[in-house]
Amino acid sequence: MAGRAKGRALVAAACLSLVAVAAGAASVQPGHVTTRDGQRAYLLVRPDQPADGPHPLVILLHGHGGSAAMTLGKAGRASPLARWLDIADREKVLVVALDGAIGGDGRQGWNDCRRDAYDNPKTDDVAFVAAVVHRLIDGGQADPSRLYVMGMSNGGMMAYRLAIELDPPIAAFAAASASMAVDSQCGPARHPVSALIINGTADPLVPYNGGGVGLFRKNRGQVVAIDTVVEFWRRADGLNGDVRTSALPHREADDPTRAQITLWEHGADRPQVERVRIDGGGHIEPSLTERYRPAYERLVGLQNHDLEAAEEAWSFFRDKRSPR
Image (cartoon, rainbow, N blue to C red):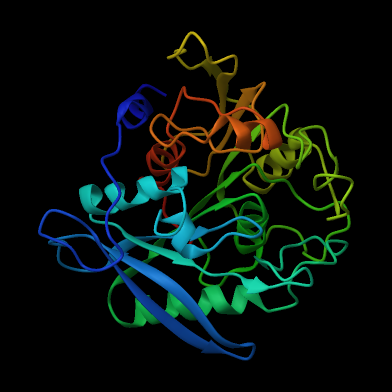
C-alpha cells in the first residue's frame, strides 16, 4: 500500500467557477442527454490543456436531495467530492457529475437496487449513465477501459448498481456512506469490479451493521451490514486471502474518529477490494480540506480528517482497467 500513500498526502486547491476559467484550471460545462424518461442533465469537467486521445472518465453521483452542482461546489457549500476538480486538471481526467431524478418526496435521487426505498425515483438511471458514457466514448473523449464511478449515500448505492449492470462495464467504483439492499432488484455481479467501500461505524442514516436507512424513523429501505457488502465484492473478484490492514496517521488531536484501511488483492493489476472504516465516523465523506459545519455533524455524525476521499478514490482507480 506504499504506492497509495502519495495520493492520500495530496491536498486539493480552491474551488473553480461553473464557467470555463483561466488557463491552469479545469472548466465545467453543462450538458444533457435524452432518455426514455426525458431529458437528463449533467456537468462535464474538462482538464485545462488535456492530453491527446481518450481520457479516463470518473462519474460522480450525489446523495439523496443533492445535485451535480452541489457535488462540484457550485451550489451551497462544497462537498468533499468537489476535490475532483483539482484531480481532473492535475491528472488530465474527465469527470462528469450527473443529476438524479425527482423521487416521490420531491427530492433528486437515484433508482438504486433498494426495492423498498419507495421515495426513490422510478427512472432507468443505468440507461441515463450509459447514454452519457457512450456519448463521451463515441466522441473520442473517454477511454472505455477506464470508466470509474464515485457516489455518496444514495449515489453510492447507485454506484453498486452500476458496478453490476452498466455496459460498458466500469473498471472500479467508490461508494461512500452507502450499503447494498436487503430486498434487491439487482442481480449478482456479472464480472469482477474493483471496489472501494468507505463507511463510518456511527452512521445514523446507513447503519454500519445493517438495518433501516434514514433519519427520524423515515423508511428508505433496509440494507445489509458493510462486512456483507465487502464479502459480496470479494467473492465477485475471487479474493480469498492476501489481506492487509493499516491505520492511517491521525492528523488532528481533536478529531475523535480514526480511519483504518483493509485491502484484499492478488496484485495491483487485478481486481481489488478496499474497505475504509471510519471508527466513530458518521454519514459524511472524510476530507482534509472540505469541512462540514458542527450543526451538520450533529445531524449526520462526525467527519474524519485523516484522508481526502476523492484523492483516495483516484489512487485506487488510476491503475484499474475494465475486464474487456
